[in-house]
Image (cartoon, rainbow, N blue to C red):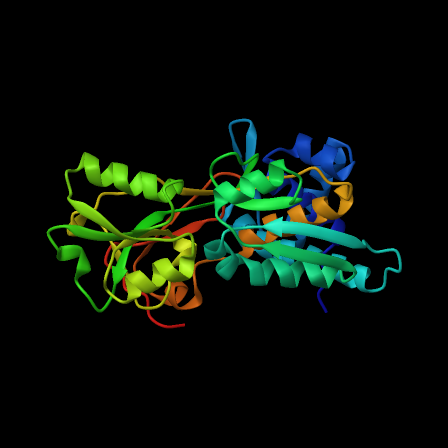
Length: 318
């Protein structure tokens, strides 16, 4: 029977992958650099594959290293959850998190499940409001953590393409004056879309304004308007539009995490770690993930590998 993988080696491996440096990883795992190097040699001998390659002064994961990384994260997470289940002194308290509802629908199930399994004695309060409101709540001390769009974020935790979307069953995008459904005027996606349409001299008219993702999606799916959404907010029956429909590329959507002032720093740190791990673990919706016609793009540290939808890709049900 094959010997099991060493969790300490896996923890060091993940630290190197996250920092891009044996030296910084050694500081994180409280070992000497020579000990870290020895751990990785033993791990590579155990899996029988090279896991790192030099890229200037940094250490990049090889293809086999990329393959091992999600398994390593999962094994370490399960180890933490197992220990927490038998820990009489596990974290307790109350933590408050906020995020827009379009993020909540896609991300919150994974975040809540992961965090509650590891921290069953922590009460989690969730507030769903637009980014502008969440920023104020954090600054006023009403939230401990918030996932927000781009602005004012201290840490970018995920990047996704921002996409033009219409109904798969209607040709709304072909109208001479493009009917649009947007969030409120403070919405950065709305500003980006309006600036792009104005720059390309495409006539448009705003028909619907709402901070509710459900309302915006309903306007799109009913065929009465076109909108812009990040990849995570796409739903069955939507059609991704692009340059073939006269709609040029939009800037990417950057999802950031804000930290508020809290007396429960340890609990907030634990939730922040779970959020980062959860977002790194989430891919595009399953049915989209299985569809053909994707390009893979490597994104910076703490940003997932994004599978980019081609324009006019129609999302099936899932």
